[in-house]
Length: 200
Picture 1 (cartoon, rainbow, N blue to C red):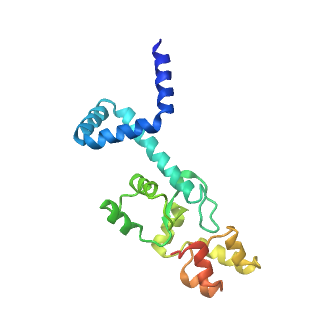
Picture 2: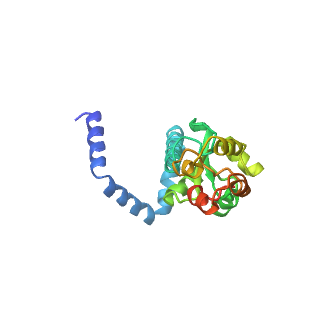
Picture 3: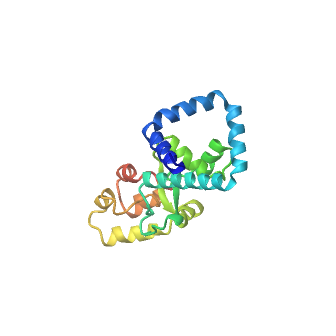
């Protein structure tokens, strides 16, 4: 049997017994933590390029899974048509992202991979949405995204059924302030909140 044939046979065996093999490996690592760390450190030192490639691949997969779990590759902000993956990220609908990251990871700057892993581990809990970085920063720095004005004009001038528009997912009020929803759009607050969350 050639080397390539052995590799194919091993790969086929692994795929057929993946769950059992992973469970066995996890049990061994849990019982031999120090030895496991020594082996991992030795492998990383001997194979830096492979290790870095694997880490990046895992990070990209976790980010992709999170974005898809919260609506896919499009900004949830009304009036924003950004779909470029590099421009999108996860937003805390209620705010408080820095405080949460500091509590979870010990630093408010621990965004990215640690946060995406946490979302995955917790089965993608509610309270998050996909925003482009411009909308996210505008919401954080200024209390509301400028696209809110686009939504106000559209609903006041072009829509005879604004609540229905929200329900059908054509617009999203997550970037509006509390005052905007009640005074400018005259939506029932509890109805809007049940669809879009509190917003900023």
